[in-house]
Image 1 (cartoon, one colour):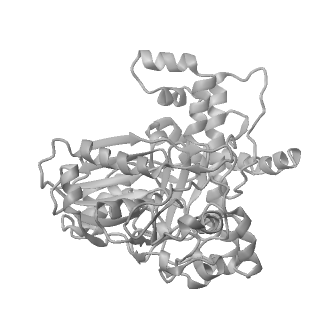
Image 2 (image 1 turned 45 degrees about the vertical axis):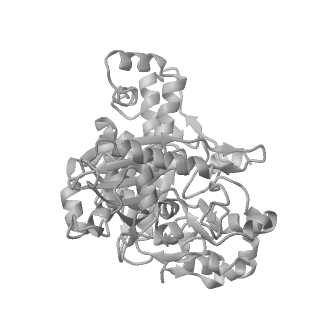
Image 3 (image 1 turned 135 degrees about the vertical axis):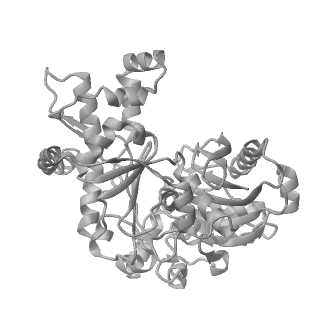
Length: 499
């Protein structure tokens, strides 16, 4: 018996089929283009998403015995939504969080005293990245489209709708709208009324793992699947990654080390404080009952290593290719073994939490005639770690622990980097046997729903295994904690220079 997980990202989608122990038996990744207009509007063509998800399903299922797949579950990026009409046809392209549309409506919520009050309800302060201001923009600028809307569906939920589910939304994706009551797990009538939107557009919220019915027979035939496959509610990609890393209790956190870095810690009761609001940390229901998560993220992690590879590391890249190893791994392995003595502010694409400053610039400090490429690489690795330490320090002050991390993603393959990271952060870091934590998370939800697993815990026990543990070196930790005090001054100094 097999389970299919579908992850829909902002640049492509992946369908993965696994057995009860998380072993991959079929997989397909399909890319699609993001469209950025001259006005700066950012969208993904909905037809591309529909077509490439179907293609990914077909190719992943090739060679799988018909009837072998028991359930399908989805995860996706947040904020973007697909509005559908009475016939279920899509009316718009999902608008990306980077799209500026909707900024002009944020003052409405402040004037109506929904600033901190909004956080108490929606788990976030008013920001233009969310679905709600985008829908407000559509109402004012595209009334022809707005008047045809029957429901709005978040992207991962839309895929299950496309496969045959009734309109619904999962709690964790609804939390990316700015209109969902994350405490009571329902839409906020007050916020929707303040936005001037039609309440009937917002679909029924359900918890992750809910069985939504079976795949539509016509769609199943089109995709070469059996028509008895269960459709199971998934969620936002980050909580699904957390589940796939075994983060099922307070005190654990997953550290996603990809192009960006995102720490997703779990805690067992809502944390609503001025510190969470000030530092842009959201409150989101986990895909597991009675737990919440937040997102501490940077915009430049693996992308900084890629920048070095493409800008300065051609020689290292060619050598790595000649001996058949990954260029990223080689670049990190040749990093200077001692502290670099430099500082890098890795705001090469602006900053995410806690500052959320898209105008911030990167900086490289402490360069001398003795600076070598291996020291520069070490400084880059130190810089991306310092930046996430800023987030971890604030979260710890708010009572959210980040001293036990489960690392997943591309940079988690580097032994030398994880040794450095454990000491700099003074945290225990574990790597896992799971190669695709997001897929593992939705597979566990699907497996519980169709009876392959007795419980979430049973699914985690079968799928998620700790591979290696990295402990901090006390002497190294002490040095970097002293340097961290200096690092925290750089952002403010740079902001003053560029003011």
